[in-house]
Image 1 (cartoon, rainbow, N blue to C red):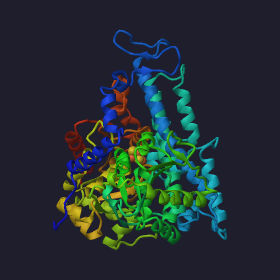
Image 2: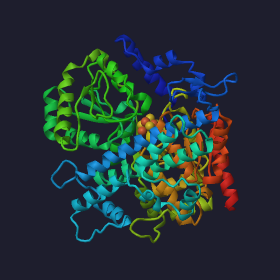
Image 3: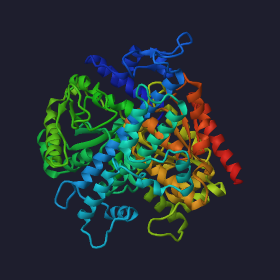
Image 4: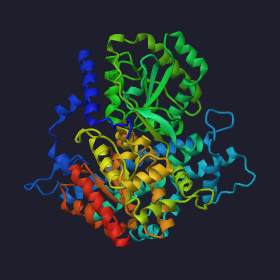
Length: 630
Ligand code: MSK
């Protein structure tokens, strides 16, 4: 096994404890302290039985008070809350996707944003029946972007992207009346249904929850992923590093955080500019290091190899190093705590989007038109802040792992084709993966996604699950903060093949891949949907028959609920480690855990015991294999 060793959660925690000591010296608050103040959590909220959608309440359902003032029972209240939770997530991902479409619409040969993958753009245009012959690539980009923007509000028809799903899946959606229409329509319709005096029938509310999820995964998120690839390049395997040790004490450290690559791509451009590096040197720094947190980090890691400083619950840690000149954020998953925390250090907390404005931050409004100018101003501001560091507060944990990232669907097909030398079209095929699965060399695949949540020991569930899965010859594709947990631990180092069972190890060696493949950010779970669709088409099976499951063991956001709904509605059994606030209603709980199987051939499992969760996933994969006779 050589010198390779995983970094343990205990080591992560020791590093965090040391950083919190610095925090205590300067009077910093932290999520660890706030969790203590907030627990125990409200039981009504946890069960989803509190209703505050009108001002007659709030109403809370108990055995003594089984109905709200309007007469709604617990099942209606829990179902409505779940639908609103989903709509919040679908809106958020999809609005991110919309921003990317706008960026594409404004791309130009001489502007800040260019088309880096014209082949992919042309492919999507053809898929959508848009004439490509003899067209200037930017005219085509604008036309496709316009059509994509129309997907958000078109009055008739279903999402264009669902044509990528296998016929059988499309029929299931049609029959269950959950085929996603225009993206904004599904979000609005969800809020309408959950309004006082509208739906209180669990079945109707859960059906719409699935539909709202589908408009995200097979709508807004797919726009986000596909057009980010067109603009910034479709990811290919690239070497990088992960964990706080990627920050460099001698350099100006800029940390990008959030989700939209439009900002972080520009910051990376300017941080690489020789003029800026010289400017940094003039302030006594040796250079500039850009690293990332959360999904913005995944975006720039996948395309540029920019190192990943950490995931969701490490965002405060980057400031606590005392070596962060600027934490620059766009949208989503940003702790408002970063404002007051950065005031305890020299760090500039820079917000850039009107969608995520926070107190105690410097707001530099970043737009497509002003991208270059604003990115340069931000990089300069960080450089000029280097001189304000307090050396006695600087401590960067000496902890990082190597990682190979950038496994877009296109890249996965390419590496696997390289192994089998199969005769394929230019886009490749998933057939080698199908062969590995049917022959049993690989038992199956798990899509590991989602966040960190203080309810679970941070990162432990992700890492423990992945270790057991790969040891059982189950390949893992990961995205979001789950992917970063894997990278920090070392599971995206190719040397981690030695932790695999014999079959998966052989595949990793032949394909020269790590056993956990980084597929990107949270919107990039749409890549996993395309992978599942291709696997089904290439194997001649339905998605639900494939030995494939999804898992979000530490999820926390509304987006994760939306994701869960589209993954499960795509026919993939989905395993959660955190309860989605539905335990107060047996009807809603039963629907999600079994009833929806009748509509979409898959359902949820919720299990807080992580050991049991992984065993249940393996069991499910083996059941599917048995059913197929493989
Ligand atoms: S950043 S949604 S904490 S994965 Fe996408 Fe991580 Fe979850 Fe945010």
